[in-house]
Image 1 (cartoon, rainbow, N blue to C red):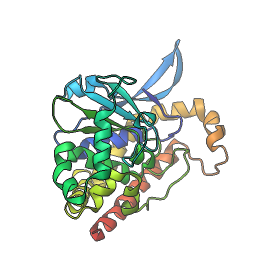
Image 2 (cartoon, rainbow, N blue to C red):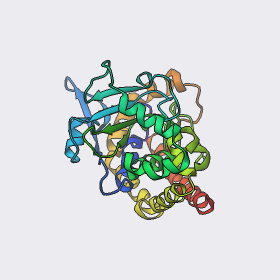
Image 3 (cartoon, rainbow, N blue to C red):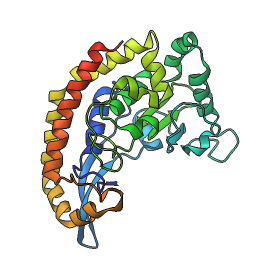
Length: 300
């Protein structure tokens, strides 16, 4: 369960997984979300977002072995560029050997080394056997489309079954998305996907490879025009706004003073209330999808 103290739309997590669930393909690891009013000792405490906890139980529900390795990326350098100690930027949350034991991170080290060391032909011919391309492209697309900079470089769970099968991925943590950064500052919907992919070396290779790049960009175009086009995403957003509006207004009455005075963003002068933030995000979606359509039409 996640508080929405840094998201006064109360919908950034839910909208991100709305997009993810639409585009990750039929074999995706689907993530469920809903909003709840929480009471503590009979007193109203606020509006919270419930999401699946990404663990061995979610993997089992999606037909994967509950004994597989799960690596949670927690540091900004968990981005498939070279790193001397992956255990500094990832946590191993499931699988054997456990974190702290010899060999615990060996599969992740091997994958990271492959991304960095394989020549173009080897990368192109083998990456689709090593990772579920539809998953990793959906991570790329969801993060880039929503301008979730934090989630491009980290904030993902990587699953590996030592008995066989490709790597799978599920992203998490969406407070930096849909028009705000992690400190709630406004972000215009004009980040260039070609520049954004540089934040993650795997993304960069999937985007720039002579064969894989056009496939990746084609999947991106299909995502924002067919599986999750602007009209569909706006309709989903409007439905979610209706779902949370009464609870959001009540939460706002309780926590508004704390929200606008919080140290991280107290210097802002452009605060919105829930209705204003909903309008802001809705327009941001329209503008971002239009911008992406133009960029992807000209991308090579």
